Length: 163
View (cartoon, rainbow, N blue to C red):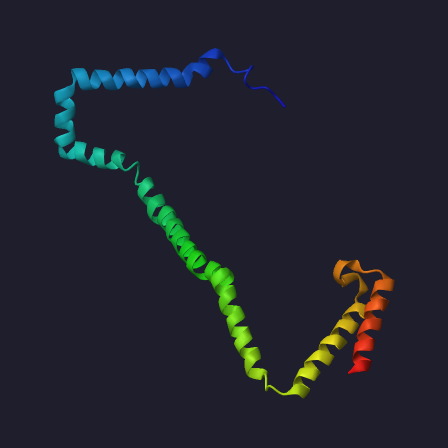
């Protein structure tokens, strides 16, 4: 990497400071010495057009305000409104509560209050547990050893035989 800081002459380094100080001195002199001239220039048609042209900085600030800042602010407002009042409420505690209530009502409508249906629930749950333990041993809770898996299968089979 080349250190350009040490290769630049001193006058070039001081150029921004010299320009700033000379600008301050020039503006101070203009307002103290040529005060009437500046007021008459500003109130003339030429002065007004120059003032309007330079005041808006070539209308660049209007351009980026209208075409960049306002659309970004509007997008942020819409995104904030949708996320805060939409997605977070649907996914958050209110949405989960509503989801669980809806699911439990749907499951409750499936129930016919008959004992054979309860037996079917019980047997299918046991069968699902057997399949889960037997065919997905690495995914089983707490990564059970093979001996623990066979013990659970034995207990479930005794339960099914007794039914």
